[in-house]
Image (cartoon, rainbow over all chains, first blue to last red):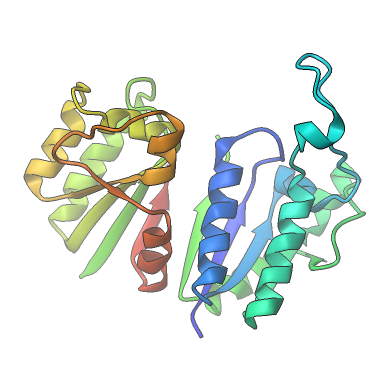
Length: 134
Length: 106
């Protein structure tokens, strides 16, 4: 089974790059291509379970109507899809970056690691896409 | 000889480096079996019919394949494309990645 590695660097709620990356990962899992993600720097906050959806007082929308997306739910959904499809999915959060940000409470389908994990991921994958921050 | 895939996410009318990326694509063309530039996010603004994006036209004339993310086009209300650009699903990027194309994101 083919596997792809993605390196993400952007913090949640900041850049279109994050949603494009999630779309790519979603496509890979639907094609039954294994996915490895190394979340570096601000991207370690993508999997934080403390994110809360909110209502929109300006537009008069309730919490339910606003349906504000939370990236940690997307990460969890990708993990669940991988499991359903029987596809490998390994999401590693850079430990140093986690400690810097206090981003310790994360969805269960992710784990703590180091840049050495990224190196191993690249060796074990058909290809690697680095999506850098600017 | 490798295949190259350049993913461009920046608005070509705003990002100074866009022309440098076009130069890179042309250089890679001389030492590869094919170069594809895949426009995502605001980079698709250069794919609109009537857009003055000479860098993209030059690439197309040289033989670089130009693709634009269908979703990003829809998000920006772009329905008519320049003749040298083809709309494509993001899924096709996954296929290119899995086949081992050397890929660079900008």
